[in-house]
Image 1 (cartoon, rainbow, N blue to C red):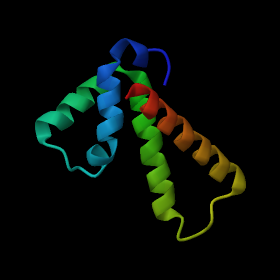
Image 2 (image 1 turned 90 degrees about the vertical axis):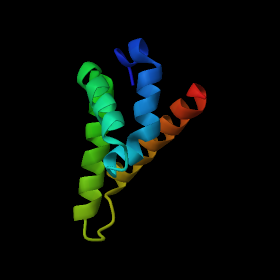
Image 3 (image 1 turned 135 degrees about the horizontal axis):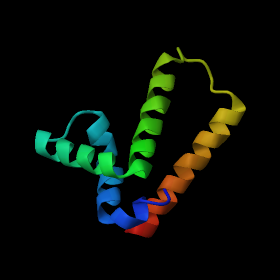
Image 4 (image 1 turned 135 degrees about the vertical axis):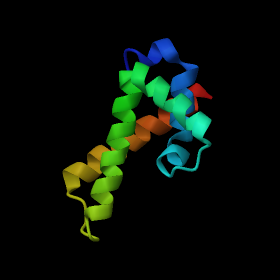
Length: 90
């Protein structure tokens, strides 16, 4: 995350922490609206959430096919960066 994410700080961390529950629709309506409001104001978080949604959609439609090597490497890099950012934010 770059740019606007640094302006929002804690709100961006909240989006990252609650992303799984948000995508699974396991959050209270008020909290869901709060995250969506933040994403309206933070293009970095919107891109992050949209990217995760696309990965999930691709995975669900893959019918068990193995990911191409280049995609698998890029996905592993994204996961590693996200974990590093999360550790640094704690």
